[in-house]
Image (cartoon, helix red, strand yellow):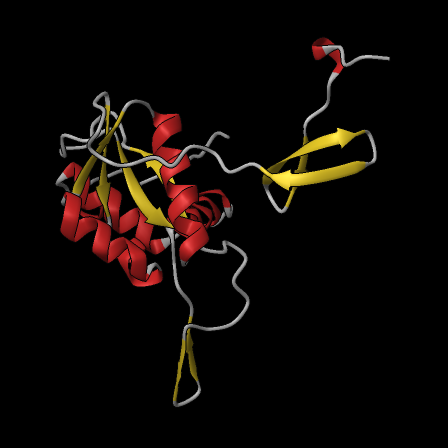
Length: 178
């Protein structure tokens, strides 16, 4: 029976597409076309220092192409990040926030393990863990939703409103609705 393109399945091994001669016999690996920065426009990416720290090959790319790289699309930027990751440390593309002051569409960042269980450093019995945006968010959510009246949050609100509630006849009541 001949191959019916509609029902062919793609086979992947180690994150790479494998072609098949028969159903059970994967043959040669097929590399995607290499992506070169600054050959197309449409999606710009800024190389962040953390990416340079984990990926030595990226320093040569930055020297040749600059700190801001352009690609035809976000998917091409992601393919580039994956391509460079195979040579050294893992990288990822993160879209820039809509209110980001930089004139870029995204950032080329180090792909950190978000479940780090070992401290980044230990100094005289004090453990220091790397903190990222997810952890800041989780800590903030805990403070706000703890049910207690957190002093740091109360102080922030007082400063933000520019008044000292102790001088007023009413107290500050913090209510959080989730």
